[in-house]
Length: 215
Image (cartoon, rainbow, N blue to C red; front, top):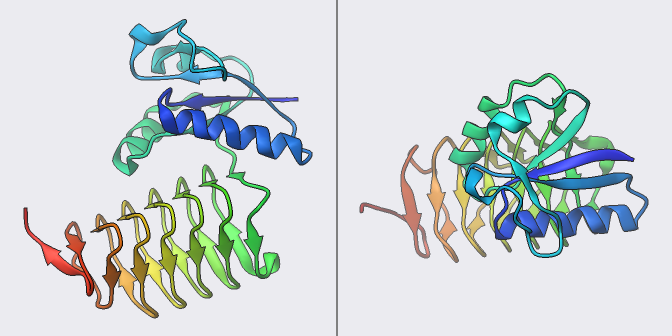
């Protein structure tokens, strides 16, 4: 079996452990060896019934055999920081894809590395994902969508067709992006919001229709 560890010993880390179990139940070959976490005081503690915290970044740097790592942090900025901190050549980052994923046409869908796709999602034809995207439960990715790196699509987010998304964006629970919109970088779209126009980078949008919100 291929060894895998989860970076992030919180609630989402437990969900990813469950995802690995579902993958294995459908013929996967992963052996979950435990968790890594920035909180080194947690070393040796149990993460529910799923394993123990083995160490932090320093421990991971000393791994001397191939080890898959899933970064299970629900904050794209933190995911990017962790990924950029891991330089050990023995570490690699597989895509973890729930067996329930419906691909309209697998021949025309491409993915990079380190993506996590949870339960009951759909990806349509001629779509692409970059690296280290979180596609949470019940997300719909429409045709001709192109998604960059380090994005978080929360449960129930729906993307219509022909959408381009850059990097470091967060689309909230049950949010909707209408056809043909381009989202750049660092955009937050609030829960239940409907984005109808192109947003500005590094801004937050809320409501129906979604409007720029200044804190």
